[in-house]
Image 1: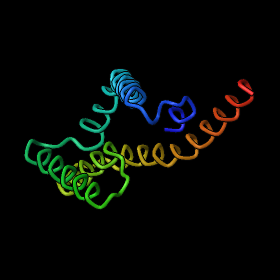
Image 2: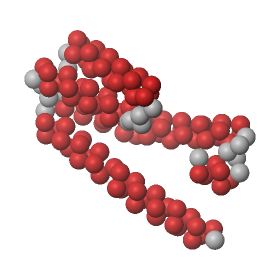
Image 3: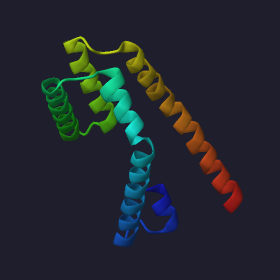
Length: 130
């Protein structure tokens, strides 16, 4: 939104379409590059679930996301899905805590790393364009 506003495109439909398409392309690229590794880590290494447990995990994640949407809570879809699988895996006794712990460490590192990279990017952009 800040980039669109700076470019003067936020008010018109052109800016919104451009932003949606750019975001979709970035998400597709991210899924293509890292999606298989994440699926393997969750589905085979963290909590290998049978069909029934996987269905329950998926339904729990869907209901959680729907509730958070209704309440206006900003949550990560991926985090909710992984945590639902972890809950079902724990209930079945197949959760591998070491793998889940590694994921938690990655999540904890995400915010400070994004903060630093975003700050640096904004600073550099202003330094170059000013």
